[in-house]
Length: 178
Ligand SMILES: CC(C)(COP(=O)(O)OP(=O)(O)OC[C@H]1O[C@@H](n2cnc3c(N)ncnc32)[C@H](O)[C@@H]1OP(=O)(O)O)[C@@H](O)C(=O)NCCC(=O)NCCS
Image (spheres, rainbow, N blue to C red):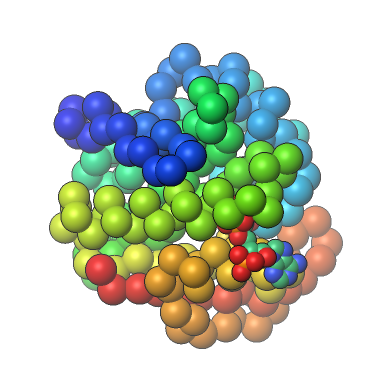
């Protein structure tokens, strides 16, 4: 765990490192937008206030490097978003679920593809996790594209199992073996 908390990853444009308590006030200005929350699970509320930010940082450090590999993503020294994985439970403990989000002002520049590519490389080279899973909502073609570009393959679609803010959609399930 200690080693993981010292990890720094670099891509062409971004720096990735585990969340720190001092990041807390940086998170709401980037994360508090319906554009992100609309496409993410209950862990990502809207509005995303300081309490939610504290909860995110605390959650990310609980089991870090053992059951969780969560990174803050910085672009030009500014918080840009996050990516990370969480180990599966029980019979799925050799797998991990992948998630990511970016400041909407940065969308469409290939940044998610860049950081998820590095996350996948890190999981393959530095952990014993054997398979990565990712899910995305039916109304999120950009995320599906990111997964396809970073080596994930569609494994199935659960029809109508996502209901958010009164609207229902499918859950697309992706996977890749490392
Ligand atoms: C998903 C997300 C991380 C993508 O970030 P990004 O930096 O814009 O992604 P990239 O630029 O690397 O790639 C996006 C791809 O989706 C494509 N895309 C974007 N909008 C699209 C749309 N409406 N329909 C089809 N493709 C679309 C882009 O053209 C690009 O593909 P390309 O390189 O083949 O042209 C960002 O939109 C986000 O943070 N969304 C909210 C949170 C979220 O959805 N997280 C994932 C939950 S599974």
